[in-house]
Length: 244
Image (cartoon, rainbow, N blue to C red; front, side, top):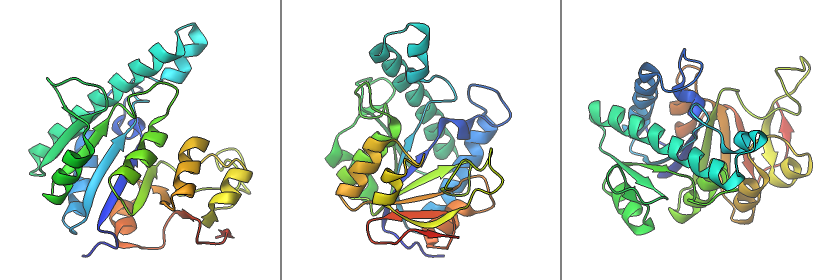
């Protein structure tokens, strides 16, 4: 098994760690995710990971209850650090060398994010987990994933979700929703398709970063995506918008 890419940014949602729980961390789900990551590591690809914190806390939602948006966002960043620690521990337990870096300084639990150090870890074959987004409020982990992917010279940003790609409308509410096989950035932004937030999409578009959206929970989709199989939706400046 060989990888199509040399270095990838994997964006996973906090919900991928929920398992059968309604909130928090299900350690069986964490271990299952770690096993998927180990499989793709064995193809030789270098892996950076940005993980969300929605299974524990969402800063943007807190603003609805009167919590200052900046305060809520910082709380959300702490949730991503907790998720990162859980995933780091699971990967280490199955023999995958891993480093957790945080955009917020917390030396007792994680290295501070330093771009050159992260690149060094990747070159040494370590999986690098990047927590706390960009370290700034009003910015989502999607934007953090785009930013870090560019900083670390990743060839693709792989957004692993619970749906099998990008649709022209919400497939959970519309039985006639159609899947995009490929999607041009301009079309995605113009039609306001809910792929990632607009800042993350614009950053990727302006810097020719490919985004691959696929279902993390279906079979070996993560491995298939890394190998370049035709699954999910590819978003790029260099493709035409094509429905499946």
